[in-house]
Length: 116
Image (cartoon, rainbow, N blue to C red; front, side):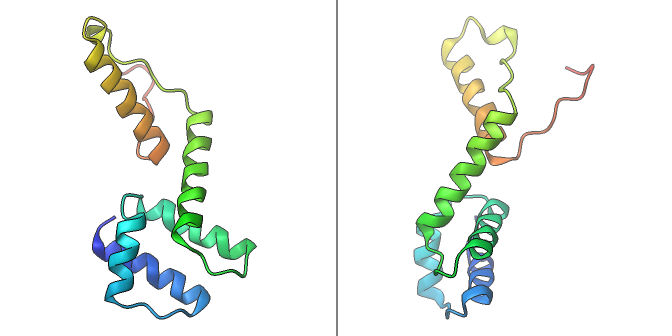
């Protein structure tokens, strides 16, 4: 997330629990959840407040996002890398990891049948 997106996330949180949000809050939250996708973090916050009256904390968001990523990976198999990478183990592993990260983050594009 960008700094602006972290602040947007904090505004959603503040709308739910009426906490005040300042610049230092945004800096700390960026350090704690800034590596997450905004949409995933927002979904995690809304799910938290659907089920709980407790203030949401960064660890709560991280756990929910991790659970979402695991569910995505369970639903979508990681496609094998291109055959030309079989002779290059490092590139093959990097391609596998990249595909898995895209699936987990929800940014993977579905394969179009019949295309390569």
